[in-house]
Image 1 (tube, rainbow, N blue to C red):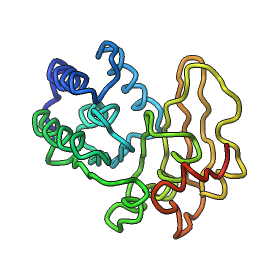
Image 2 (image 1 turned 60 degrees about the horizontal axis):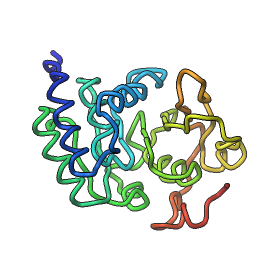
Image 3 (image 1 turned 30 degrees about the horizontal axis):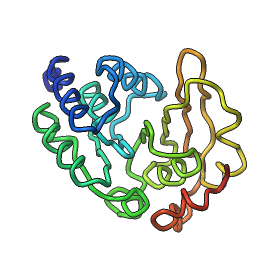
Image 4 (image 1 turned 60 degrees about the vertical axis):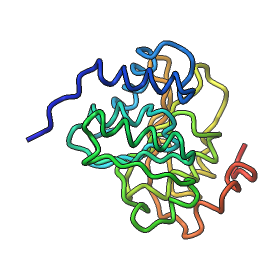
Length: 209
């Protein structure tokens, strides 16, 4: 039996508090929630497990947690104050029994055997440039798992080149469109033991630009 749905007002109240603490952008919260719900529409199947990369104030992680009441999840956040807020938010929303918060850098957490290659889905809202996002995310994905990344509002060229992605064990499944500014990548190959590289390197020395 699935848990009772979380009231929308409770979710908006928690995220409004996140915004007041500076953990979300300054715009109205409801459109930010709507955008986060877009992540839930992108996977080819409802995931049993997900990880939100750089969860910040809880978008899209908290929205996904209440959207998928049967899924387990991890909200990954390197900044202690934000991670503590997310832990409190999970408790307030009644999802703490199946959604946990990990306070760690992605480059480190992706080598943790309890997290490595464990997730059907990884999401990234504003984690970093494409190359760093892909490299940090792929270590968490199970074979055939999916990575959903929020894209800029306008096309800005080829952000996800096939060759370098293949070197990470990834391939583009679906590109962003005018109506859905998300890209979906699938894990199609093995992930090298050294991926991701040590802290800071994926962004300082990206595999592509």
